[in-house]
Image 1 (tube, rainbow, N blue to C red):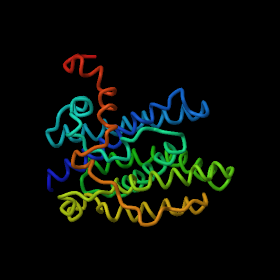
Image 2 (cartoon, helix red, strand yellow):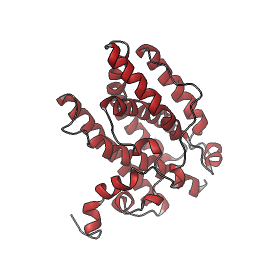
Image 3 (cartoon, rainbow, N blue to C red):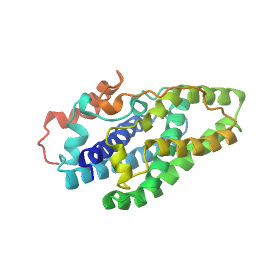
Image 4 (cartoon, rainbow, N blue to C red):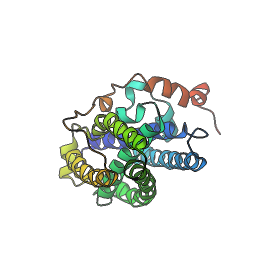
Length: 251
């Protein structure tokens, strides 16, 4: 197994859910419904758990730092999250569309990883895939309701959100050096294959929602190489404030 490629894959997966968990948590107390405050808070908690599990695999199998140090002790340039998860929440339609597109990608990815040749990841995939079913059900229910079953305004807002989020969502599937080795070793099917499965999945939901996928959109890339939006730095400052006061503290 290409250990560097494996570490890179685990790190970008962990960083994606770590940062999006923080964004989701920002809806607590601010959602349009109390039920949505609870939903986004619960999903955020699950995603933090996914990040911790991935950081633990890095620590136990690849000599990585402790999970807390990986989550809170790295600089912006060492983060490997995609740009999609860094973006501010904006209006609820934007956050909801991001939630749907990201969790659809996660569901496709973790479903494939259930068959991974890397046993620790395959075992974790069985658990995470089950949780993602509920995340995805929540997201796609709202996308369909606000699209096909809502008002003209709600449909227009969801269509605008889809147009704005789509290029960033494509960036989830940025191909990395070493991915070909992981594919040949049976670790995962590759980003191109996952992207095609994801497009097929979301296209079916958007057809039900009467929303149109943007054509000729280019993927927003760079996060996997440590080039981030202007929004990640302030997010990390806030997220790591307590840890940075005393990284050696025992809780």
